[in-house]
Image (cartoon, rainbow, N blue to C red; front, side, top):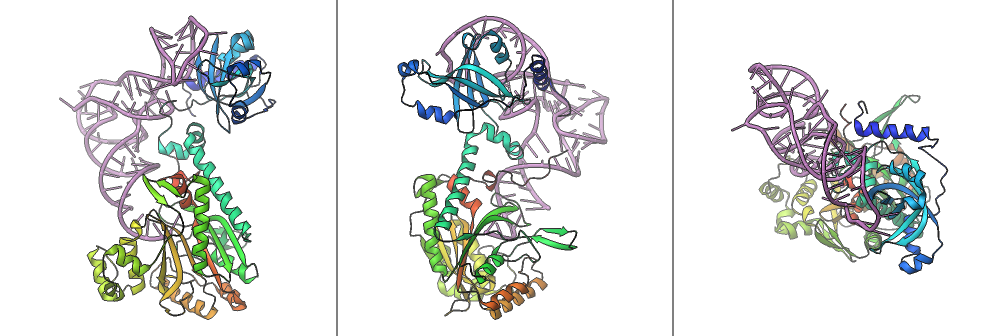
Length: 494
RNA sequence: GGGCCGGUAGCUCAGUCGGUAGAGCAUCUGACUUUUAAUCAGAUGGUCGUGGGUUCGAUCCCCCCCCGGCUCACCA
């Protein structure tokens, strides 16, 4: 704050006046005995007469969100970590001297209140203050009480302010915490070991994405922020942990959008002796249970429409989905050149040398993905776009993989893992060729990973679930920025 | 990165066909001991995103830049 306007000057002056009177405007000796929600729970059913008799005395603390003054008395709305509560402050209850101090309190100040419960004549459970203590003086005015803070830039840059004034936002992040905790419990209950693998990796593998680069001074080496934990988690399965999972951040140096933040949270998990079919059942159970727990129903609203998460979910192959949603015959998409012509009619501008498999996924992204509102598993992905997946035993052009789509977005990606080290090396070499041909996101060679496979990765299935997108779904949030506390923004203008 | 839209008081927003700006809330003063966006009377508060240009004069017109939103591209 370079120049102080009147509002700020006034509040600073109040700090001085408190100190002159021997009061600490940042006191640290108030003992809280209850939260607002606890008091509400204790007296939920007590009517005015019952409360008249009570000798209960509670001490609560929180931020003043509103005050309504009446000369010798006032009502406050006090907000603590649990909720809000009305406090009644009367001059003849707290004394003339304290009432004068009370009159200097501002909206936004953090106070400690002791008092007894009663009901107002409108029957609202309230606290009649016997003492009022300033605990923290607030120097900046809060946003307006009715419209609140709506400017999205300020909301994201000053999330603390957003959280103070927007209860819905507090609720979203409570739900996020709950969702992560439920998932963690679900995994642990099923024998998965939670692990942490490197964020800084010498080779950024496990996904196709542009990484962030950083540098270690002593080692004199560049390191990449991970784009996925996949290859490390599978090393752990080689090591003998049959079921592992990690819930943590990935970093991808790509565009920012309503669905993309440079750092985002994924859960990846691996299970030895399982197949991608097992993981479809597992995923249905996990997501539907978490949804039911958090939202109270399998049917949840998103963007004004319902999503029905009741298992089982639709399962279609990639080609079946294109036939169904693209209104096109199977023989067209089975033929690479016919499919290419069809893509042209969709307005897709593709490299004329594009492979059949990649072509199909381009068509899928265009005609199918946005339409998969209800949860749907898509299977039989082309081998050429899946360098870490196990080839199907009967049909080596597709891999044993699925992606899960809900509300037109990819939410999970899973496959039976490629555990043949010779095949894996060949796939890496193919990726290197694509990299040489200019594909920045092609997968890098990871010799140590191949060495691990040479010791033997048991047949394993693995999956990644986008936690931010799951939270968006379960909190009916339109933007990933609404489920990440501090989303990436450009630096604040000087 | 491209396109479109936006940035005015602490907050939410008006407005000026170019003559240096208003409202509500917040704040301050006064009245008021059961309010619920309390009410009533009065008052304070702005380098109109930054820089430049045109002009007698720019918050308004023009240009650059910064920040944000939506969207397209890329992606999860």
